[in-house]
Amino acid sequence: MNPPEPTRLEARHTQFRALHAAGCFVIPNPWDVGSARYLASLGFKALATTSSGFAWSHGARDGAMPLEAVLGYLRSIVAATDLPVNADFESGYADTPEGVAHNVGLACATGISGISIEDSTGNPYAPLMEIPRAVERLRAAREAIAASGQNVMLIGRAENFFVGRPDIDDAIARLRAYDEAGADCLYAPGIHTHEQITAVVAACAPKPVNVLVGGTSAFSVADLAALGVRRISVGGALARAAWGGFMRAASALATEGRFDGFAGATAGRELNTLFQP
Figure 1 (cartoon, rainbow, N blue to C red):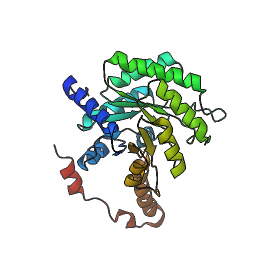
Figure 2 (figure 1 turned 135 degrees about the vertical axis):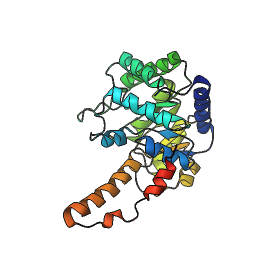
Figure 3 (figure 1 turned 135 degrees about the horizontal axis):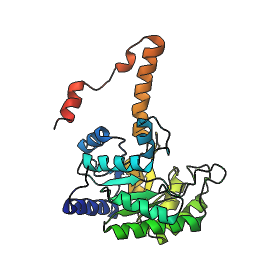
Figure 4 (figure 1 turned 60 degrees about the vertical axis):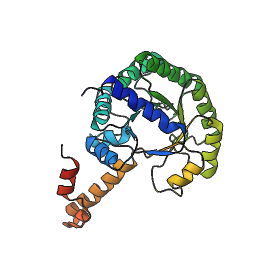
């Protein structure tokens, strides 16, 4: 699968940046081509990949998929629809800034319109990178995007609340540093209270802020828009919802010999109509 031809690709990149300029939009996370096409059919304006959803679809834990597989996933989602795609690129799949730059260049070649870089380490005893190290890696990503010649957005992520270090002041300090390092959009997944969200939005202004809603929430899209949030993603939540339905149906069949779990299943003809050429 090749990326769209240059003029169409540039149009996607321009469209993606425009979505961040004003208002608030939802950017859902498909885990395969079918889920991407269905989300596009609902009228969403952009899509984002999900490292967890993709990994689970291959029988792997989140974070366990190799770079080549992830690049193939990016190419498939970019090719699935005409919508701009933001890549969940974890921490860049490399230990060094040079490695991050190289891999970001490979990701840009897939046709993505945005790329998110995390500051988590994967080490439970020291789960967050020191800010200078994280900044160096983000600057390397920024330089790689410039070298690619693509108008790809860079999203800086502060993983405090995801890795068990829920320090809002440190998260804000990180996001401000990532802003200065060249991030176009800031993201602290896991913040969920009115106070946390408004603090991050105010600290990052005028840069757009992404908020993750990974489960039931007291906020609606309109509520988050009123707080100044520019984009809302759902991470692996849609994949988890699909897995939940599958697991309940399969469990009832295996343990009770019951078919109740098939109630509410989408008709095959509806899916065939959706996916017809």
